[in-house]
Image (cartoon, rainbow, N blue to C red):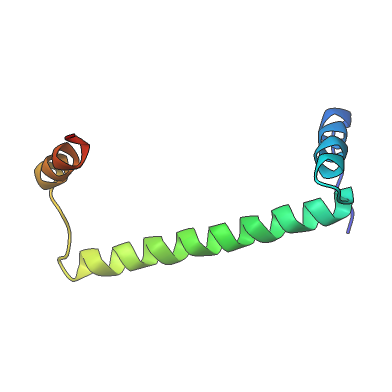
Length: 74
């Protein structure tokens, strides 16, 4: 597989990899792996939320506002 970057992206990738003492291809693999991990986590949480909603487990807008106010109080 080939991925094409703009010259600016390539320069930034090379610089970041060098700063971390790694090869650019290693950095790209790690970034892609993190992306898929995060995407999977996000999809799982959305599914979990949808299932809770179907069970009637949710907060109204007003309830959420009250919780947020309490959370932000010093």
